[in-house]
Image (cartoon, rainbow, N blue to C red; front, top):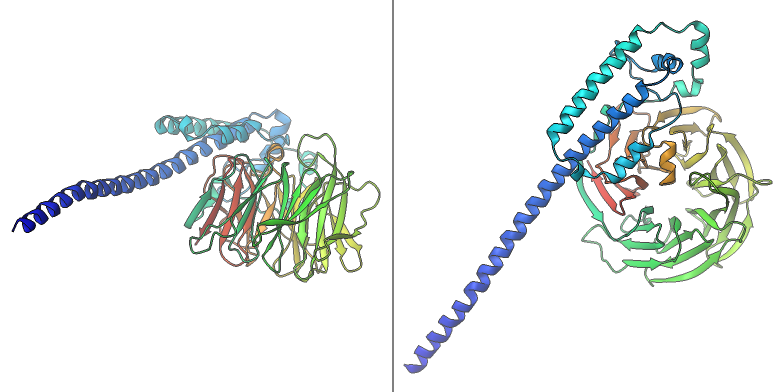
Length: 495
């Protein structure tokens, strides 16, 4: 009897001890649930405030452009519609200057700076009324004579540009989004692996991080690589999905084995060409090509490129094979792209040229002036019958490979890729697996996604808090990467 009483006392004491612990666990769960709800609401509010801020900046920029001199207004009159609702050509900055402040505000003025959404709405309303006044004034100006119209008319190629107004960009419908916050400085490059299961991202502080975004993917390959200098280029080996090539600002090319978690080879370019601007692996052969550049003083990253060097490397022997001919004192090579069978290499240059090389022969087979300014990025189309180029003027052109010189499609993204933004990043483009959606880096907090040769509306990504410095598409799925000057990398799956 005494034993039973003691046992009952013991069980009662044990239960009394467990009840507070269970209550504590329940309370903590409720707290976590509440915090998650609060975070979701705050993120939604953040997006709303950022959208308001972007609208305000767009109106301010329009007002600045509206304050042009009278000769400039004559040209503006050809590029905006004041009464005709069917016209789709937006206001153009004829002075050729973009607003530095707009980029800085986007980068530095985060949503907490907007304390009252009503104030923002009132400001936007005032700006809209002011713009109406500017448009009315333009209507009262005398029309241009025939000679002035002819002088201001843009070349035929530019008149065919597909131009989207800011309000016509629809926000993407997101299935899921993951944000990686492991870097401590602006992102220089981010790339999906060949299988799409891993992501490599680099930053200007000299670190490379390999990570996963899907909880079902093992994290055994996750790693941080310290290179000690700015990372300028990243490239996954196309065939095995095991090697990552890293190009640095001091002439280094490192090969990282993601399974062994170590550098298996450390190569160097010549001292004359210390900046490894881009790296591209052949899709079929164990070779890769490096584009290196000498250095000079410049106002943007492309201006800082001096003369160019193109080198072919063997990935079995890990040695230099040959140098592709570029002529004497060639302008900087900004980007590289292999075609589907690895036989042809395209290289874009800072003088507006696109060069095409036969890799097996080691010779240049053709080339043409693609842009009036530097070509920031070049990319073969998915059907291999065309090639895309992005100029530093913000123009995107799709060139026919069957009829040289023919432009199949074009678009103007100068509102995202303007000259001042090149101080922050080297702009690039990326195509999805179907070759129909083209993603572009941006000096704004959102990147545009264009429908190539399509009639549907252009899209825009969810906002970062600073410029978007690197982009990439998943090799098979509708998932894209955006790396930003806000130190973050996002994986976004869209419907």
